[in-house]
Length: 107
Image (cartoon, rainbow, N blue to C red; front, top):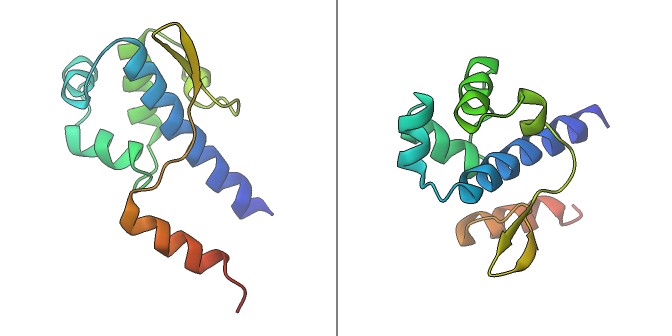
């Protein structure tokens, strides 16, 4: 059960970073420039390939002008696009969807 909690927190951080970045109209390179975090680190974080260190979280929070706790929120982040609220969640690239389905399949 503890592993699931850690996994869901990693998902929340990625979605929250993505939401904050989109709210500002930034691409990943913009966020890298504003935060001092490597573009590859941001890309890996948003694509669920890497968990952020506390230093990275602090730099990202400073760039967004929010407390670190906002990036650790367990609530599903939403963004507004064209007057509509969109809930963000984990979206796997096509190659990883098959891997995820295989893990959920009973043995």
